[in-house]
Image (cartoon, rainbow, N blue to C red; front, side):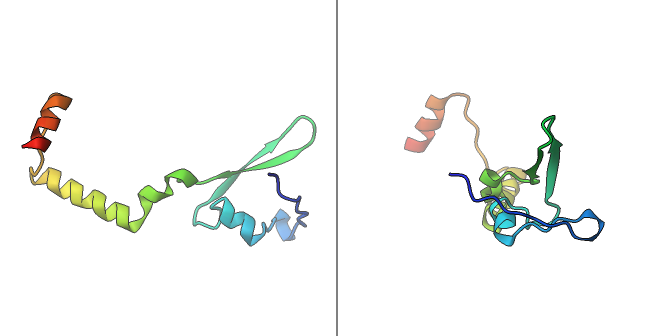
Amino acid sequence: MPREPVVLGFQTRGTLALPAGLRRRHNLDQPGAQVRVVEREDGVVELHPLTAVPADQTWFWTERWQRMEREVDADVAAGRVTTHDTVEELFDAFEA
């Protein structure tokens, strides 16, 4: 459901300040967050949030998940892995 429009006033040097809730909802409160400005032919100016990490992928970049990724990398580097050529071989290994 669309939210109510927000009227923003320009600050010095053409700066717009987006409301905090809007910034949080679109991850624009993160360092390096950007918006793409689209000027349509009908005169409408659109702001499209751009984030280095899409909101549905942020779980991967949590400290917990990154710690688990480092653990896996260490296991691979130490040779603590097994490989299987088929799914059947994998399931046989689970059952053994």
